[in-house]
Length: 271
Image (cartoon, rainbow, N blue to C red):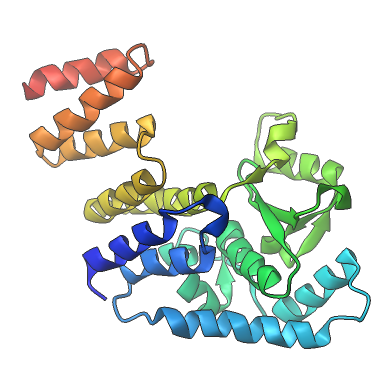
């Protein structure tokens, strides 16, 4: 598929009510920009097949823990999906087609796989945007459990999440209720694209950074930090007019931002 058409398809998929966004399709559409020959239906069928195999293994009484254990056994024991500990910052980890083919990924991409499979067996789950480590849980909060898909579907309770947070950050961070709140499909996609953004930045692949920021802005058109970052990137690439537009818009939204004076200096140089 053509590069621009891939992003256009992504936009069409997300340009609807959040609950109607198909996470798998949206993830595969932005992957088509990187993999032009990617066939969306092939990968949706692969997800369907995995779900059908799990459906056939489910116990008659579908208690949440039994359903989760059945999913875990098939995905992690039989199919050998796992977190990519060795090459965590490989951009392939953020593309659902690569996750399905290579059976490895990072927390959020593996979580999208799990969410899509759970949806197909009528066991709805939601994403949990805990800082530094994405989790999922059953849609009904009273279950009181969280799933760490990156770590073989490990079942966590709230105190385990607090401990996981302590392991991630050198300075103590108190587990706040908002850290365990469900996130929207748009937020999940934005987090996946943000991972790619920083990977591409570290690799100095600036054209890909721009494309990914554009994708984030399709999800959240007035996100000030993304507009600022795109403007700064345009500045580095000597695309002055585009830099001015984004940076001026950023200042209009956040005139008292901590970096506002620095942005004004850059704009003065451009003008």
